[in-house]
Amino acid sequence: MTPASKSTTDRRGQTVDLIKVKSFLTGALLRGLDTDKPPVDQRRQVAEQSLAQIYAKTGLQLDEAVRAQLFSEVLDEMLGYGPIQPLLDDPDITEIMVNGPSQVYIEKKGKVSKTTVSFENNEHVLRVIERIVAPLGRRIDLDHPAVDARLPDGSRVNAVIPPVAIDGPAITIRKFSAERLTMDQLVKMNSLTEGMAEFLRACVSAQLNIIISGGTGSGKTTLLNILSQFIPEEERIVTIEDAAELQLQQEHVVRLETKLPNPDGSGGMTVRDLVRNALRMRPERIVVGEVRGGEALDMLQAMNTGHDGSLTTLHSNTPRDAIARLETMTLMAGIELPVRVIREQIASAVDLIVQVTRLRDGSRKVTQITELAGMEGDTVVLTDIFKFEQVGISTEGRVLGDLKPTGIRPMFSSRLEQAGFKLRPEIFGVNIAEMLAANRKSGSGRNW
Image (cartoon, helix red, strand yellow):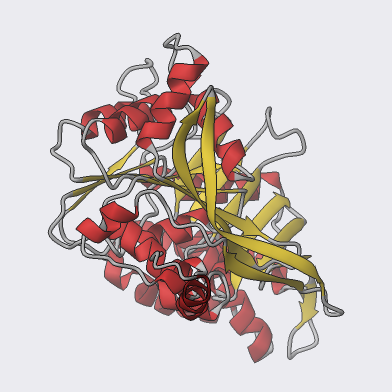
């Protein structure tokens, strides 16, 4: 239990209500900072000094460990995000879920568990939400009871309040890793193979249109960030997101973020508005953080009108489901199009679907890399180039399986070669030595 949730006895044997002490210190420190208004870069140093002075004047003689914890909680309340600040500071925690004042869960190393962290009440949770969204110019109130936002470090935040959140305010934070993952690290983590990594690097460099498909928490945005590293430095990139979290390292990047309407309903900018606007900005690459609605139509049209090399993500559990989702979202644009026409748009616009999956043991893998190989009747033809084959579960609960090429070479191989990427046949599961031996035995002179 934390000092703010119980009483203690000081060195003189007197009982001290730590909740009241914390409230007093927080209020006094807030008034002092409002009066002094220190520069942002000096705010924490000034706060620590002021807090020590305020505490000294109280005459309290708390044990050192209790005093240090109390100071930490007060500073977190003033300068951070209250009780969840220590969770945000823990690099091993990847997700924080606040279901209510006394129900705070975390995801750590792929496992979800309940913490001992707690807020004072629902109002305390709401104050933290407002502290998150206010600097971004976003609002959360009865008219807008749900909001997507981001923390200064790029962590993604979703918050909901009554009346849509029946039991009180709730917060979900997908933490942004301070360490920028690379493709080599994904290979070491067995999220994909070296051959798959080499293939994807070539596909991005050769300006193929790629969709990353996956469920919640499967690693779509992480993979999108990694794939974006292969975009040549000299190309102009426009990124479009609901809440900016992509971290592209290239210099020639324009970052766009949606905006909620003003109270009178004017001034809003949706993802679809931004996609349309991006087409007027001479982009060589358009990267959309996630397509969720009618912007899918604009994205497909952009891909079909010379904006090759576009990247985006969507929620779906398989490549085939991703096609169905794209159809549905295209219809959400409000333009009546026959399903066959939509499928033709998808088949001609999208070159590759990369499926990422969070497995039962918490690990994340690229489970399919699938080519869109055109139309057959009214159906989009999908061809798996790589696929994960699960074989069982270990005694420790780990998912067992292999990432394997299917032996099929993609139809767009010539585009890769024109871009300077002549990939080894072994990447696609073809054993040249065995094939030559078979050819000699059969008298055939055919090459793969």
